[in-house]
Amino acid sequence: MDTLYFDLRDTRAIQRDRTEKISEAARILREGGLVAIPTETVYGLGANALDENAVARIFEVKGRPQDNPLILHLSGQQWLPRYCADIPPMAFALTRKFWPGPLTLVLKRRNNVPDRVTAGLDTVAVRCPNHPVALALIRELGLPIAAPSANLSGRPSCTTAREVLADMRGKIHGIVDGGPCAIGVESTILDLTGPQPRLLRPGGVPVEAIETLIGPIAIDRAVTAPLPKDERPKSPGMKYRHYAPRLPLTVFSGAPDATAREISRRMCPRTGIICFDEYKELFPYQEVRTIGPYSVPAEQARRLFSALRAFDESACTEIYAQCPDSRGLGLAVGNRLKRAAGFRVVESDTQRIILGLTGGTGAGKSTVLEIIEEMGGSVLDCDRVYHQLLDENEELRFELRRAFRTAFSIDGTLDRKKLGEEVFGKKDQRARLDRIVFRYLLPVLEQKIAAVSEGLCAVDAVNLLESGLDRLCDATIAVTAPMEVRVQRIMARDGISEAYARLRISAQKSDEYYRSKCDYELNNAADTRELFIKETRVFLRRLIDGLQEEKRYGAREKKKGRVIRE
Image 1 (cartoon, rainbow, N blue to C red):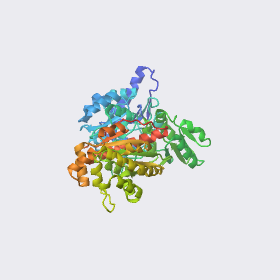
Image 2 (cartoon, helix red, strand yellow; image 1 turned 120 degrees about the vertical axis):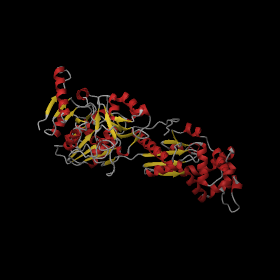
Image 3 (cartoon, one colour; image 1 turned 90 degrees about the horizontal axis):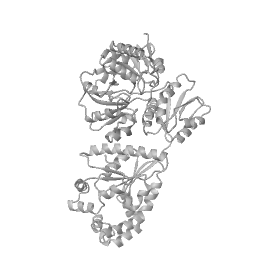
């Protein structure tokens, strides 16, 4: 098969010549052919999206799995009602802001969208590319174009027409050369079919920009880990290994100095290096491809796929690559690198993160702590340490017995309920109890926190703020909940009366106190425990990622009073 080459790189070309070439490319698409087209992200392998036979040839030519859906490329939001159903108002708000541009929306499909495009799903992915040639071609065709990246399946995407030619010469009918792609990584994919917007693939529109417009979005697990083999992907880039060079790739994640040191320690003479511009001189005897300065993820996105392809004809036997942080476009670049490596990632530095949890009893701290343990973190339960001290420290017991004689039996056994009745609602007595307990408890807790050398640790303390333990934490979180919900929870949990439950709550600080003193608030007002767990996982993941990045960039400034509600 001869592959026609339409050169439209020169925007100053005679308009008639440009129009004729676009018309010829549109004719090929209308007749069921395949044409590679330029977009602002990467080159796409285009077919008439409403022609099932043409769409089937995309899968055949690319070697693409049949359950991997395609994206419909439209000329504007006015086309949405033609191919999408039950469109939420949020979709129009997003398209007004980001179209034309690198944002793909997953919406409910109409019946006129072929099953081959959607891989049999009841949803369809749609976007409007921000490239004059692609838009002119869609308008000339008068139909949507289905266009996955114009590379062999699993290989790095193409950001120039010449790279497309290397993969597709003789396999497709035409290639339209519109110059190098401005962004260099695929579009961001956002699913709007569920109760909360969900990021399925990071891309050319940063998550932060989307959240500024519509608020928090959930991050699908496929963004950071492989999708299980038996699960169907809802969009491209979720399930299969993508973007892979011909050589095995290992990605090094962490602070750039640390990743450079770890690469230097592990590399051999035939290891190829992909690194930030600042670190090229550290590898004078290696074959190196740079992807831009560490602080410029937009440049990294433009150069990444070309860097991966550059090693195809190399004498190297493996590739080691530095990974950017997850801010802005860095999330998309890191996602592509990790998928290219099959998630073979070396964490080059392990940050210690200490979270302080506080709030009134019954608010849901135990649930949050369970989630932290599921994430691999450890939990320091200050109440448990306190009761252990009561059992083991005679000096503490002596001081408490002297101060609160009626709470102890003749044989020296502490009655916790009596102690509670003696201090709850009595400000001076509560302060007296705290002074005694803090004197013995704080040194032990400080030693335990200092012993945490790496990883995530949560400190659970009702008196986190009053004791001064918050100064040892990277961030403090107030877990709050409506009063009546708390009453019912602690009655059921502790088997106590409603009156005693209210007495306990009344002796504690108000939610407003914790809200004003802590860095963040996690409000447990969800209708179900399952929903609160889901919201908390998203909250914690984002918070921990942010704290790790702040540690890499220097000392963190506390932001008291900043509130996040999930």
